[in-house]
Image: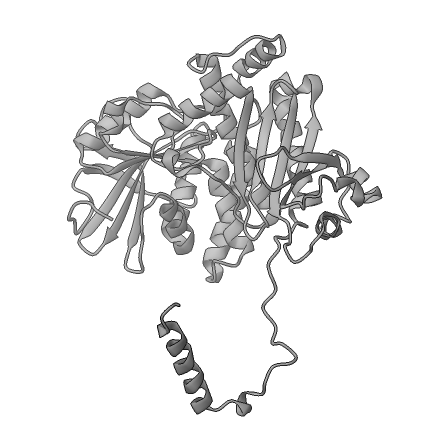
Length: 460
């Protein structure tokens, strides 16, 4: 945790109130009240604060002290109209890490101009980072929902939390008993109650942008979408926000943290990620995401297909190699899905070599698993696919989200929680083995010497 050497209150801070759990603010100051409560919990509930900061890549050890301020005025640039909502200071010995905090609630969104101003203020005062919190979503804290120029991003580290992410993390910590101190649990539970109330202004992502309908209509009419167009990039950005929100929904439903899997090359380059997925939208007319759920048989692959006006979810597992026939291997899979409702579920079978997979409805395979056998080959892996046709609702900005947020949990309930990866059994000792006491060390030595002698005999 790099930073400057400090021993007391930051020298760049002219004025600032310590964050309060019960702030006395005007009714119109929703953002100030909500942020003050969050910052006070970050400072007071140690495990919660350290967990959220670790998500930013900031390590807070046992000796780290967290200080939080609101209504801050800074020495340089702080008297201007652009004034950040809060300040975080992490102290570990003589070292500190500092971050400005800017919050939005309700339908208010962060803007390029505002973020540029705060990053400039951070640079002027030697502050390490700017943390933004809003109802906008990002797959990673280092991927911001607002695109800024490279010049602005060099001024300070820009990081982001959604309010729903903060609420989800607090809920998970309470549910998993990560907070042992009784008083701290009470405080965190009260914060969850507050953030869950409509008056706090915390919202899920509930509507795709107008460009979603435009892009869907263009593709349905047989037209093409340019990967460089504003519409395509806005649609991809909205997909990122919705899939992140859907991960948080699953996290709360399962009581375990569910993550969007981002390719390593894209983790450090969100611009490349947006470009790649926009090209995928233009060429395949599909948007894709991968969810990682702890202790499941495989990652969950999700896609939205604009041509088919459908959403898909799937998981792929290797077939058990201790079963010799395709029918036996398939029965291993079918037993796992015996309680699953078959509507919309299909099984894909992958074969040795580069040939295409074959696909059958789950209902058909239950009636006759031998129908999957063919060409004398033995299946090597299975993919369980769930498809839901949205029809005209696919292009509707709110209904698409409603249907997607119902379809993916349905898939997990019917498939994901039942599916198990095959593992080979541990080897068993042979029944006709010699008793260990019947073999002397001398006999073993003689056997080894004979083997060496055999290798040294010249070939005829």
